[in-house]
Length: 175
Image (cartoon, rainbow, N blue to C red; front, side, top):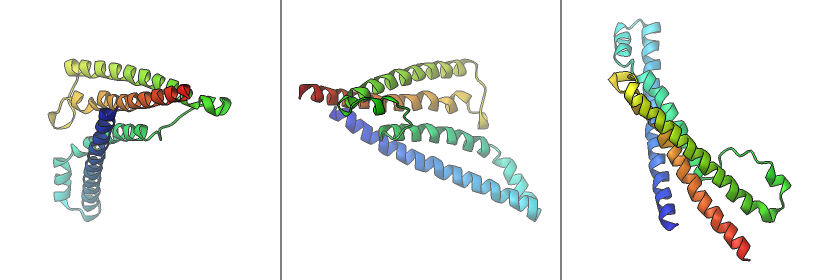
């Protein structure tokens, strides 16, 4: 279990730095586009229009980075147990059954995340065979890798939760 916690802490740091880097890229490219559009539209600077033509790939990149940020953020939030929970049983069950409920819910989340990982991996495999290109002649499957990667990260976080919750249920039963 300590090894999983160590891996989890490393992933949290890596995800945090990747999020900071991607968000910085998004701000830089978006700010540059807004400035160039303003210079061309209001300042009538033809060179700004030419520059926008040279960085026309930056807008699809920013949209792709939004997808990556969404999945990386979802993974971080899942690790902190701050993800969206729709739970009727917490109000109906006595407090002593809450660890069992959490254990069952985490098992269900592992199953759902594993299913999504499997489906997304299949989708990326199909895209590798038949897909088109993104910007700068990059294959589209490279951008879509976040789907299986994101669900793999979320699956890992739920797996760690399941083990933690399992130990908590075992300690509760042993009392």
